Image 1 (spheres, helix red, strand yellow):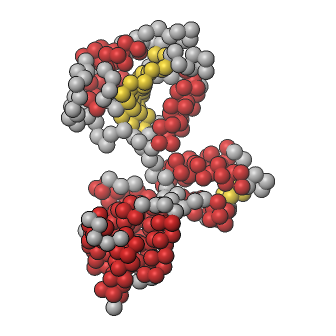
Image 2: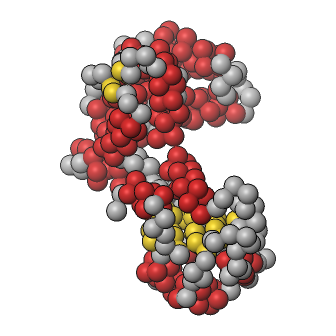
Image 3: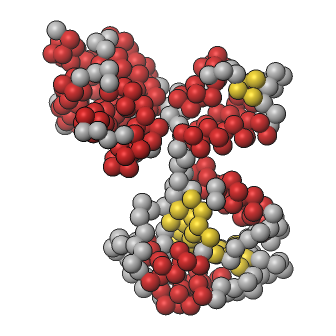
Length: 343
């Protein structure tokens, strides 16, 4: 079941006593919390019938005792369990001794006046564990992972239509690209576009370009394009512009390195015959980023990508050790790359 359908069920008071929320997309997590809170808690009773417990700081016993406590002047309690690391194979250093047997007993017989929600933003759960098996069997599972490009566009289209707006040709694609397919950013920028088009209700490519602020990743992507195409002066200007905007040079270079590494990895995997979906799974990267990388890596040689990546690693080391300023080193990097690859 899609998350939109699950949120509608919650809104319609069709509630499960147990939820397991997987994934870490902040917008979707906020939507889940908002829907549960609105469905279960009146504003006046929210503080009395809501509990939130982090398993690195709070005991599981405390959370379960709260879940088993009757609501105070209300019909339902809402309890969140954050970071339930005991569902994974991960070893954590903590003084807390969580009573998993008590949790197993609760899962078999949950309180009918409480909705207990486990937020597990982990890449993988340990399904060999008894407690994990039981939770997966008894709870309704909500997937709050970052959506792929198709689902993201579908969610955005639904929101735009519900507000009485529409996209002009190419506008949705431009919005997704400019926000780096980040759902939270897309939704934030949509609110600005709604205000901008309050009269005509038609979102255009031009308005996306004017209204939507490009992400840091998008700006860095442009710098990398300049570097690879030999436009060293344009790359230097773009880098200095970001510095003027108070972006940290080390952060900019780190993102550049990450993007070049991804391009290299994608090129290598493509030569071995892997397709977009397979590459995304192997590299554990959002499918949209892989799609862009596939398109980009076809333009440039493996040698160019490898050289740029190597020079960036050297530049990063020189800047971090204080041997040269970030702006001077970036200029040297851009010019050095152009001389070594373009000539």
